[in-house]
Image (cartoon, rainbow, N blue to C red; front, side, top):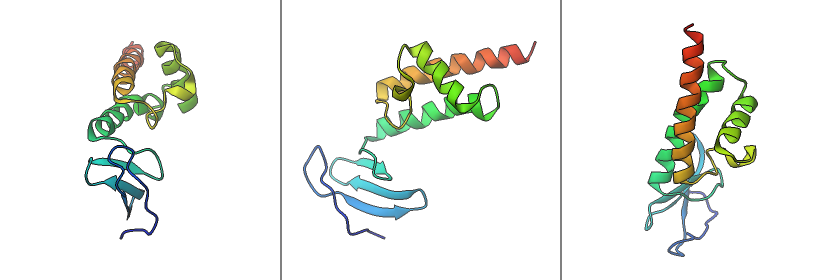
Length: 117
């Protein structure tokens, strides 16, 4: 189902297509292969995959109860020398997501190692 609202791709300046998915509205540029959900910025496939990988490594820190969600983001921000509002997957670049993934893996592993003692 295509919705009526159309936006312009920031790269090729053509109209984007908006379709309704089970995750909410999905905007895409068929020329540039950019996608975005729920009115957020359009991103390329590499950035999307980096964000998914970040969440796959970061989210277990709070989902498994090692920290609450807010404290997990605060810890990650401190480790990365960034502000908390800058370390959310939905706004990070591919490169920042890769860095955040590395930190998240270390943080998670530290919690696992503590749990096993």
